[in-house]
Amino acid sequence: MIKLPALLWALLFLMATSLLLADEGYQEARLLTESGHILPLQELLQVIQAEQSGGVLEVEFEHKGDLYLYEIEILDKQGAVWEFKVDAASGEILKRELED
Amino acid sequence: MSVLRLNSLEHRLHIGLAISLIILMGLLWLFGARSIEDLTEDFIASRLEQDGEALLGAIVLKQQHLKVRPARINQIYLRPYSGHYYLIRQANGREVTSRSLWDFKLQIPSMDAGKSERFYLRGPEKQQLLVWVVGFRKQGMDLTVAVAEDLMPIKKQRDLFLRNFALLALASLVILLIVQGVVVRQAFRQLKPLREDVKSLSSGQEKLLREDVPSEMTPLVREVNHLLQLLSKRNERSRNALGNLAHALKGPLNLLTRYIDKQLLDKNETESRQAGQQVERIRLLIDRELKRARLAGGGTMSQRFDAQIDLQDLLDVLKQIYHEKQLQFTKHVSSDLQPFGDREDILELLGNLLDNACKWAEGRVHCSVSGITQLAISVEDDGHGLEDEDVVRLTQRGSRLDENKEGHGLGLAIVYDVVRLYNGQIEFDRSPKLHGLRVNVVLNHL
Image (cartoon, rainbow over all chains, first blue to last red; front, side, top):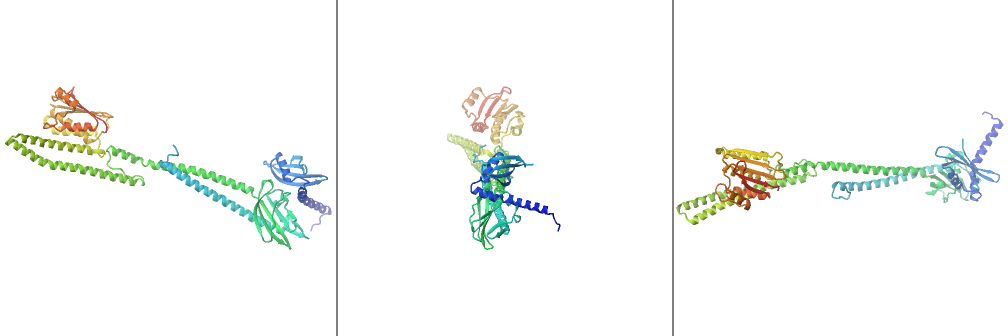
């Protein structure tokens, strides 16, 4: 077996945990929605889809200090992917951009 | 062209076909829709069962704590609102949901181990979910596992198929109605020869209808032909009977005449003379009634008078009869003359008029026939003609001047009968060219 440098091992571990964390974010969002701290994803999607129609491609939930953020990717009919950043508590669209 | 013309066979066929096709297509559509729905649902349900069992294999239990190994399940359960969801509930109420469900709450009843159920639920984003719920027991713990799939994509496909099917059914209905219309019209076109046959039957050119008609019409045509044959036989029989009667009466009448003549020679009694006159009258009456019966019996079965052919035949006969007189016949027949009336009637009339003319003519007889809607006949001779007062009498009163005269007694009576039968007119005057008698007859169609 090839011996990998320790740094690479650490990097791989970090990537794995961050991936795992990103995937597990929905459970936190689920609890926060239930307790009423943030808006349900469906309501936020309605706001976004009013701006840009399309289907949900990916959703990520982030917790930055007091701010709960949703990063939502929308795939439109032309095949372009739009990225939205939304304040999960107020439903305000913070950022909207066409992904490269 | 109204659809409400129920008397038209074509429209009745159209309505019958349309109703039966609409019912058939409707049933087919309902059956198809039902079958496709059941089929797709069963297919999805069997997939859900497989996913549910795979999920059960991916569950890890550590001190009452439940986890799903993400590597063991399909990626589709990770993408939010992907349309594929699962939910696992422990006996203590703790739930693990798929990432795809995100924060959406599925209302799932708890199931005892070994039991399962299938039902519909509303999902996120107006999705319609088919949910399969099953109870399991793993490592001493009761679990309820629900796996769901969105039916909307397959439902859209199904609706599209059913709409196309309905359009196709409608199109085929229209095409079938058009094809049927063409077929029916073709079938009725086959009846055209029959119609022409009937027409030529009434004009006397044909005796029977042809039987090469559509098989549905054959019985009718056969019946008509049978009837025609029956009628012509009856006609013939009654004519024969009348002929036989005349024949049978001629002998006794001749005997009577001879007997009376002998009596007249011997004693010359007034009574005998009167009896002789009566016998003569009986003979005339019988002849007249026989001819009348024949006129009436002619009916539609007989042929039409065609002046182009029939007049020349008649003149040939008269030429033979009067060959001693060396008569010169001239005739004029207008070229646009159509076959007219009953051949026997017209020949009778013409024969009598020409016979009279031949009798009185010195050397020339002229006959002309013309007319389109009417038949105009004119017969002239170069004899001494009638005195003016006789002409007036004949014309004005229709008097039968010559009826009791020996030799040509019946002639004009028959002529009058025919003229009356055809609602026509008869006039007598002096021929401007031949200076003898001219008879003008105009006949109308029956």
